[in-house]
Length: 184
Image (cartoon, rainbow, N blue to C red):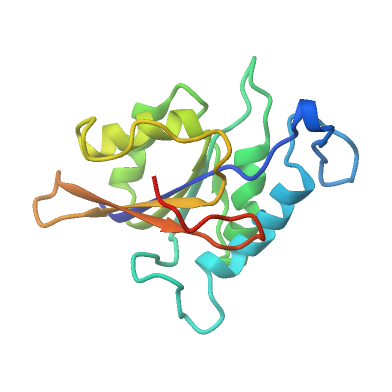
């Protein structure tokens, strides 16, 4: 059983009205990819979740034993969730689990809760709410809206003494210049 599930939103994405493009790993424009800021966040998350000397910036954080991300599917071809945490997983000697797609939040939550140790999940922000609600078992223990402009938060869900009870802690990443210390 998981003791801790940490959820991040995928990194920054292309902005149509600001002419900010997505870029694939080969440097080519790709609307389904991270923006350059998203790639910067992806790199910064390596030491955020796998610090060199084991010193996390917040006591709620821990080194993941398993990493999940949303897989591309028929109508949603985004690689953003996968590429946000791929480098973190590689730094830990792990592979990203891509068995679930957006819309499979219940199945993902069930698998994450039964995975041993500490789990890291990268997902789409509107569906993070659904994911947290399944894990927490209600709609009252977490915010029910994730602002479109926020890519800089971690929701940490810790299993409590009762095996079906979880507690949410929010952590501000503070990795990039425009990150905010404000929680939801």
